[in-house]
Amino acid sequence: MKKSDTTVSIKNYSNESKVIKCYKRYAPLYDLLFGRVFQQGRRAIIKEMKGIGTKDVLEVGVGTGLMLPMYPQDVTVTGVDISKEMLDKAQEKVDSSRTAAVSLMQVNGEQLPFPDNHFTCITLPYTYSVTPDPIKLIKEVRRVCKKDGFIIIANHFSGVHSPWAMFEKIVSPFATKIGFQSEFSYQTYVENLNWNVVKSYSCNLFGLSRIVVVKND
Image (cartoon, rainbow, N blue to C red; front, side, top):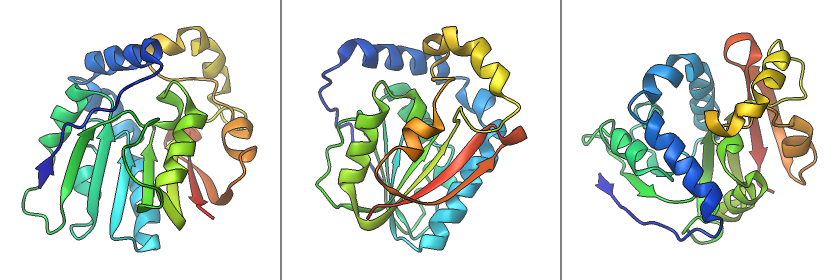
């Protein structure tokens, strides 16, 4: 087990600084607020990952490390997050006895410091709609994902049938303060992208979130 504090320079400092400040506030309470309520989606990510049979995974937006204990012991895990405070919490969840390494890095997901075609599987647990530039994030994720590798997303999307539709409209003006985009179009950020979606299904309470599995071909 090892920890790295690699930090990538940021072009859009204003937006990024807002995200950093937001998650600095959330870090002490994140597990309590967002742990159990989103756990079904995390379990679904792990199930899909096990079905792929990968031995390496990059988790973009590892946060406080809620998924770290869920990864198989023999899978090498690289976890990146923009927030040092969140990573400090994640470090506490790393099992030093596991057979494969876990590396945690302070990194902006929109500027990943990895070579092209590097990871077999990339997971984004509730990360897609909290980054300043979601399309840039996905371009970076696809760049570092191997050809015929897999990208597994758990996220809230608007524009799909859900009892949360009214909630989206109510909280939309406060989205930046809350730390996520409440109106995050499934059509814009999934259907309209030139990629191969092999699975898409709802998860979490009342279908709040969706699992999207993409083959990077």
